[in-house]
Length: 182
Image 1 (cartoon, helix red, strand yellow):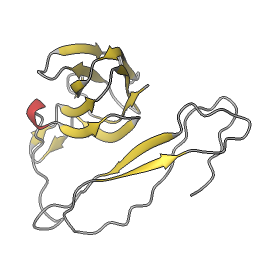
Image 2 (cartoon, rainbow, N blue to C red; image 1 turned 90 degrees about the vertical axis):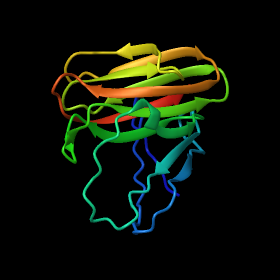
Image 3 (cartoon, one colour; image 1 turned 180 degrees about the horizontal axis):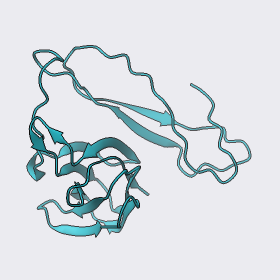
């Protein structure tokens, strides 16, 4: 519980959620953030969902990182998209001796809607694609340099979709990916 203050014209805020880590291997955990009682404003969206990712592995936390599994078939499952989902990650770096060149995310829609995908907070050039359930290209964004990438897909039918984040050539960058059903 807390209070969030938006300055005039501001449309985004960050809410820090403290996570008390342990070494127990467990499923990812989700939580909801509900906004209420606006003063001098109108709320466009009142609810968002966050996910706390399990970062523990069987055998302890001191293992060497696994090489990235940058395959469409092993996409990170973001589950059913009901609002905005935000992921922070990095692309183009060497992990476990292999270069991480593709990050895939999977989400499901249970109703027709418009999906907006943003890739920002870039330090180098990275690109973005929206793919269908069989990996077919639906849309892409390839802006130059550190410019944010945005895809707006209108009237997507219910089904399974994938997002691919990949570096431009030899670029390495951290990124913030947000996928929103608007």
